[in-house]
Amino acid sequence: MFSYRHAFHAGNHADVIKHTTLIATLRHLMQKEPAITLVDTHAGAGLYRLDGDYAETGGEAKDGVVKLMAACRPAQGTPVPASPALDDYLDLIAGFNPSGSLRVYPGSPFVLHTLMRTASRDKLKLFELHPTDGKTLDANIAQLEAGRSITVVRQDGFEGLKPLLPPPPSATGSRRALVLIDPSYEIKSDYAKVSTCIQDSLKRFPTGTYLVWYPVIPRTEAHDLPKRLKTLCNQAQRPWLNATLAIGQDPSHGPDDRPGLTASGMFVINPPHTLKPALQQTLTILLDVLGRGRGKGQSVESGG
Ligand code: SAM
Image 1 (cartoon, rainbow, N blue to C red):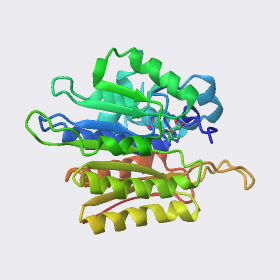
Image 2: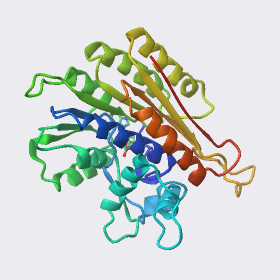
Image 3: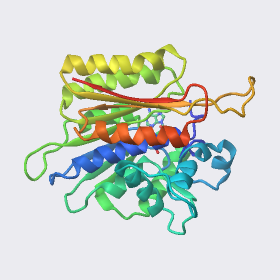
Image 4: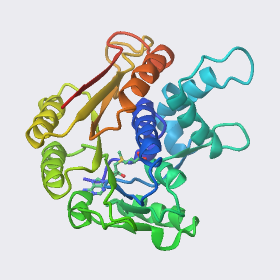
């Protein structure tokens, strides 16, 4: 059950679409003053070394954030023009790497922490089940000395989310929450758990903003998940957005090489109205820079 370690994958193309979407969504929500409850049901370790053993083994950041940074922020030569949402993402990553070379990659807990506002009393709740990654996350978060504004819990995130919804009212009485659901899907039951979790969450708190990452792979459950989420949104009469990025096959790979993950999607429920144009512009650039070969593509659709 615990074979998945995000350190092998940190900064890959899936993290790029996931964290760019997360930042663009949050930026919009942060324009309104009242406090917001942020929940990361599958938090990971929080921070990752891109020059460490894990990342070296996977090397996945090379086809993700490393390639993107080199294209849009080259040390020399003409940069590929970035969209505002992509600039926002790259600025955030650069903020963790003040020396200029890309050594550290912030996972979703640190993306969320960077954007949360202490003055507005935003709260961040992090769930991570893996014993080692949970400990690392604890230690990484402790360094922030964020007090009670951030809570780390070694508990099933699907279960832990339930009592957090609806979120407590802010000083002005409004209730606001953003929830990131980012399982590793190493066990098939995660797909059904995501659907059940969204169905339940939409009953508890229909106006929350929910972001679900999912892999685009030839597996029935993976194929059905975005369809199922659309149905749930339509039944609950909530708007949704579905964005995918496929970098395609590596042309240097032989027919017997394992292709690894080449595509993934972000399904956003109650997305800000600014998200669709921002992602349309951004995914076009991401595909130009990260696209490799057969099967590459991107899409942004919305409904509700
Ligand atoms: N959200 C992180 C990010 O963007 O940086 C990456 C998370 S990684 C894809 C998924 C994480 O969920 C793994 O660290 C795994 O140990 C953890 N995990 C698996 N099942 C879980 C569960 N039921 N509840 C909480 N965490 C879980």
